[in-house]
Image (cartoon, rainbow, N blue to C red; front, side, top):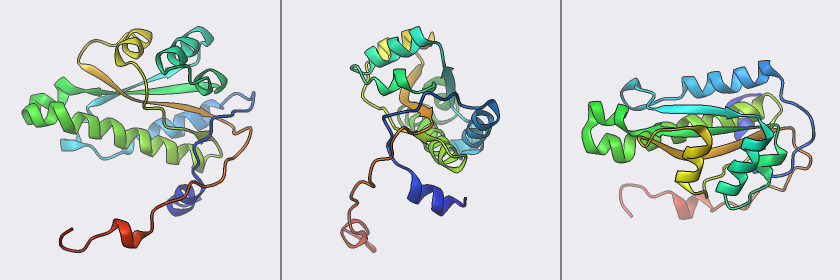
Length: 173
């Protein structure tokens, strides 16, 4: 599957089959995250793989009871390393570049998952302090996204998108 097909096939799946994710597929997804571009090639993010049922329940609670985090065989937690980026780029690195780095890596993981026949969703609504506690992260690691990963139990229709003519502007707004 090429990248254009992966993008066209990606859906936000919140219903997962009771089938484990093979290690080879998880490794490929994590490798794609590792290949994602980042500011100054710093890769100012960390990824925590959560499989333990009790931790998945705690993540779901931290994410306002988004139970797809429990149902998925595993969850990937992406955290921005604000200090790593600030060390090179100052306050802009702390506020923006680290967040961008983690976001790009998580988005690449979603496309990698589709390419190997898996499904994901982007979970961005959560209590940062609770997520940090679940994964044992220090203050300078900011949770950016939680990505449940697994085989889809059902595939939702593609969400409507804006027309390019209303989204793209040439030269100025």
